[in-house]
Length: 119
Image 1 (tube, helix red, strand yellow):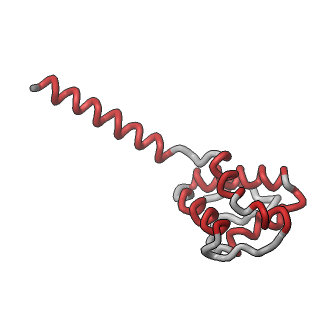
Image 2: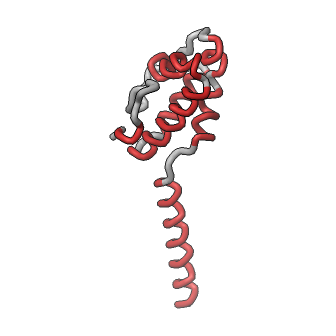
Image 3: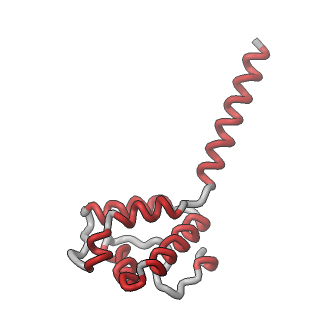
């Protein structure tokens, strides 16, 4: 019985360690790109404007729900800055997404934003 108890303690400890690693991992750029891609028509053409409840805004709100820690915000910021650099002519459209969708990511999306200094 004691060995079963010890084995269960090890399993629970490994599980909790895994959860803490998952929860502390920063948001990756593939995830950010996936969410922003729901707004591809707006980013590419500038219209129609996303509105709360649209698939685009639902994706931006879901992205916002992932950024509850400072490192998450910095990771999302770096990914968005990479998208802005890649899709430079559409940088303004990307920057306006949170405002159109009625949320704040906790930082300003601007080509000169320094993601390292986001609290």
